[in-house]
Image (cartoon, rainbow, N blue to C red):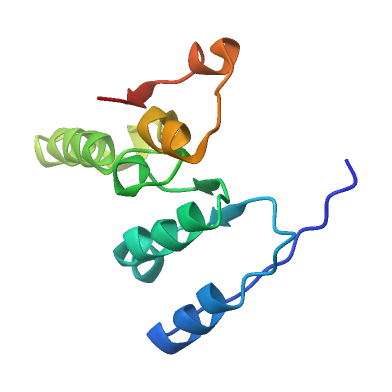
Length: 135
């Protein structure tokens, strides 16, 4: 596709501030991998990205923090799934007979942020979204 992926590892507030102040002009998008540090700084990151009109995407559900697109399990759903499995085992189901499960992934799109940044999300993409953040 002619795109270059640059990986930046950020482990401190100072490194984050340095990165945010030096984002090159030719960056097409920012994608966040899951980490507690990134999640706790999502609003700070998205504020800078929005100011620079850089779309954001995340591997964690951060649409309500200003991330334009996220694709991930939702923590609430993961908790329900884990509690159901734990309940079954605590009620006597043998752990080895409990089938393995994977988490469900959900596509989230924040229309509010797309509109603020001047992006139009195509209808065929919106129809695939599991949830849409809008006014």
